Image (cartoon, rainbow, N blue to C red; front, side):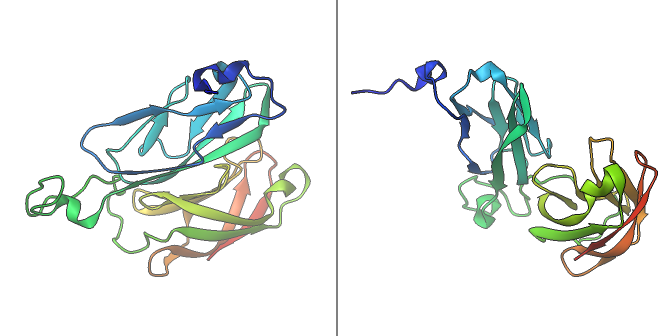
Length: 223
């Protein structure tokens, strides 16, 4: 018996899902586009967001476009009638070292560099490259108490780290660091410029987060 993948939207399932969960492609000189597979709900019932849109984009129909900028990011997908039910797709665009060397598969010339996320102006070469950071937030109360906790942030671009939901961010803005918590919510809190220092391939240090929504000040430590 054959299975018609195009008829999946008509199947009554007790769950919904999106595939693939992980996307890894080699960088290319032209965009690569392909559709996400949606199971259990109609395709137009899903909304999407990309954490770092410099690396990848996704249309309202679930068409993913990527390939010309290397880096790591994440696609969030959720049912429009239930925004708390979120699925995550990890995206990684890699450029093999020999791809842009003489005789490589791209036929590059000596000195040619692969495409990359644009580095902030004036930023140092160090303080970048770590795959993840740990940010501990404390001191908030009331409605902003949800910001407290230990958050793991993954690298999504040059000098940018975000958590899985996109609410916690550490990034370089021109020549200064910015630390944000509760992005896109009434609990939003920020420290800019943040007093971070370099620990090899990532920023580190403590500071204060000022909550615009709840009028409170909390504390953070990045390691």
